[in-house]
Structure formats: structure tokens, C-alpha cells
Amino acid sequence: MNPFISISQIVNDIKALDITAATAAADHLDQLTKPPGSLGKLETLAIKLAGITGMERPSFPHRSVVVMAADHGVCEEGISAFPAEVTPQMVMNFLSGGAAVNVLSRQAGAEVLCVDIGVNAEMNHPDLIDRKVRMGTANMAKGPAMSRKEAEAALLIGANIVNEAFARGVRLFVTGEMGIGNTTASAAVLSALIGIPPLESVGRGTGISDEVLQHKALVVERAIECNIPNALDPLDVLSKVGGLEIAGLTGVILAAAAHGCPVVIDGFISSAAALLAQRFSPESTYYMIASHISHEQGHGLLLKELGLDPMLQLDMRLGEGTGGVLALHLIDAACRIMSEMATFESAGISSGQEATEVESEQL
Image 1 (cartoon, rainbow, N blue to C red):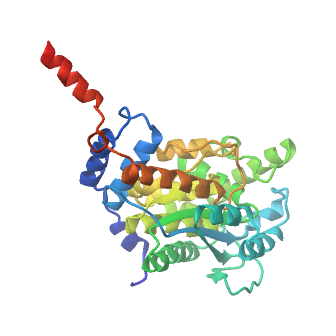
Image 2: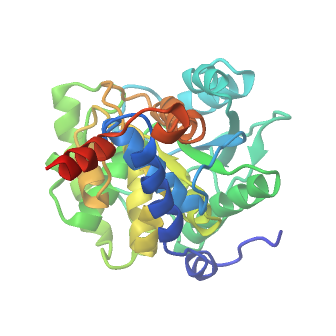
Image 3: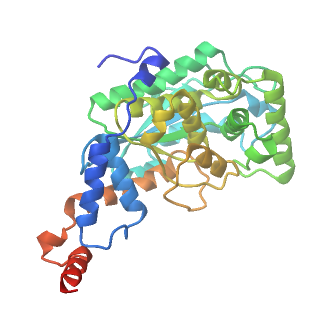
């Protein structure tokens, strides 16, 4: 399978949903032994999965969680409760299988792909996917986080990680990330794209105090003032106030859509990448599934802007892809409802519609 070599190539491959398959799925759901619509969001999800895949009854035996890892120069501004050294340490934790996303992925039958796209350390592990663009971003409060060329390279790396996994048979993707300081970059992306003040976009991230929260908002404000990112140019926003892992996840989301695969969006950072993907291609939103709404202040705003309704609300704010992996169980449930549940006809049960028709005839 040929690699993606440009953003426009990926965007041009993203198609509209398969309305025929989605309609067939909706009709099938109405024939199952239940009142119409009684399974709520599971039914909406089943219809969406059919539209994405073109199959009335899809299944996803092979699924990948793509964890993009990178560092952020803005950490020198003191915006996190944890030091930047935690990023490479956590990457090694992912690779040894000891992080929360590893535990939850094992439960959900998903593989974890850990990608070094910009960790500010030399890393060596046989299972690490080494795609480092640079040793972390620059301090966006003093200038652009990275060059436009670097942002595009990181996005294409994410896209081609999906390309390689797709060639191996993966048909369902989950976004995950690791990078101390990345909630600051995500807040800056949110503020830059939709024009809200940083006090509305920043959150507590790793658990910062009220004082540090105010400081974090000021840092984001300085980053936007000194870089003047163009809200109409997502690559400009990404390069000036984004992060390498955010760029990589943007590529993951766009490429999943280009391959006709559902992509489960995790929390705040992943949703910032999703908003960037939407700005590159509005059609890419059709392929996104919002897993949960996190405790980060700006996450609800991001989901509203994307027009996505989250499946879960568990007061989580860990990242890594943990909320996304939990949503895999709901995707499996929706698929099994479609493939295993009896219809009124097969079960020999009278449907509500049939009863109504009998009553009409008697009248």
C-alpha cells in the first residue's frame, strides 16, 4: 500500500457515508425484538458504523490504539504539575505494558502502538515506533512551536501509521497520546480555532492549583498574541501553537476516515486533533466516534464544535486513549446487537406494528 505523501491526498480520499448501508442498518434495528429506538445511543452507533464501513452488520476483530508521544517546550513556563522528564518515562511504561491504556486495551482486545513522534530524549525499545520529527516543540509562548514543514511531516507520520496498520487488517482506530504540557497546547489550538479566551479553554491538566491555572491561561494568551495563528489555516494553527503528537493524531484521524474506518476520539488532546482534522476535511467528522467527555474544561466546547455526542461520562482526565478504549466495549455491543439479536419474525413474536395493523382491520 502506497504511503500518503500530502495532506491533500488524504483529504481527497475521504468520502461521504454509505447511506444505503446506514438505512439498511436502521431498518434491521426496527425489526429486532425491542421497541423502536429503545437501545438509544447503541442504535445510533450501529447505524453510524454501518454508514462508515458500508456494511449493515460490521465487526472489528482487529483494532489499534495509536499512542502518540511528544514533548512541549512550553513546559519551561511552569504550566504542569509534572516535569517534562515524565514523558519518556511514561513511554517506557507503555512499552512494558504497565500503563492504564495497556490494561484497558488488553481487556478490550486492542493492540497499543506507541509512537515517538517528538519525545525530548533518546529512546530505544524493540516495540517503540520511532518516527521522531524533532526533540519536542519549541516554547510557543516565545515563538512558533514548530515549522510548518515539521507540522505537516508529523501529520503525515500519523496518517502512515494508520496506512501500515490498515494493510495488516486493522479496521478500527483509537487515538491516544502522552506529552507533559499537551493540555496547554490543546487549549491554545481550541482558542485559536474558535476564538474563545484562554480562561475558557485551559483546564487543570495534571492537577494544577488555581494559581498555576491562571498562569497557564496567561501563557496560552501570550502564545496566541506572539504567533497570531490563522484560524482559517489549520496547518498554521498546528505549527504555531500545537504539538507534534497533536499533529500525529490529526493524521491518524484523517487517514482512518480516508480508509473508511471508524476512529474513536479519546479526551481533550485527541479532540483538539479532531477539530484540526475537521478543519482540514469537514467530512472526516462522519468517521469520528466521541468516547467520553473528560473533566478538562474545554473538552465539552470541543465536542460541541465537532457536533459529536460522547458515549460516556466517567469524570476521567488521564488521556493515553483510556476513554477511547472503554468505548470499544460499546462498539462491540452495538455490533453484536446487529448480528446476534433475533427479529420479531425469527423469534415468532408479534411486533407492535403488527398489533396496530390487526386493530385497524378490526375497526
